[in-house]
Amino acid sequence: MTAANDAILELAFRKARSFNCFFADKPVSDATLRELYDLLKWGPTAVNGQPGRYLFIRSPEAKARLAPTAMAGNQARIQAAPLTVIVASDPRFYEHLPTQTPALASMRDFFAGDNKLAQDTALYSSALQAGYLIIAARLLGLDAGPMSGFDAAAVNAEFFADTGWQAHLLVNLGYGDPEGNYPRNPRLEFDAVAKIL
Image (cartoon, rainbow, N blue to C red):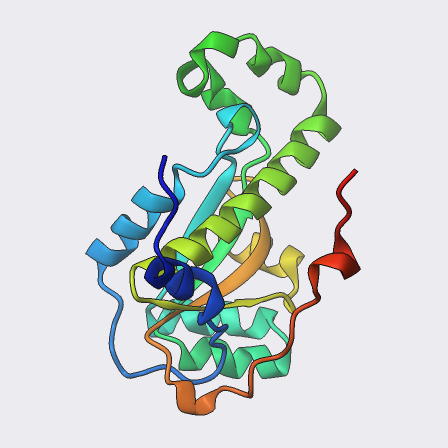
């Protein structure tokens, strides 16, 4: 594998920004959302379990259902964005392991017999997948604004009562307007957060 060039690194990380408030009045197509998933799905997850689930909230009716579950400031952001993705996890992700990880098909029963392990694995792997979603969006020319500040239980009741999926994060997606951004905040340096032993 070869290293990405500087232009790609700038797009994915160095120059990329979170966009929460201001987006151009330009829709995100179904084809783009499918392309987004077709990229993010390749990111690694525990035992290739792929527990992340994604509900793309785009219609005014769906936004009207989602917005009340969020804090006041985030309600406005949901309404302003072309769409908001509810990133959730499926705690029964292990049902797919016999086909997704045939070499470890017995892991299906291992997770089925340990609810806490299944829940924990679904949570941290779906969090990884949320990160992949944001990077994939940037590489496709979209801007992303991840948000907490919502009532996950209310989202689960409103959208996932029949699936058992569990919401973890909201991500606004669209084509951002940089005029609405604050100056970029600094990042911690290597020596403040890491050691080499």
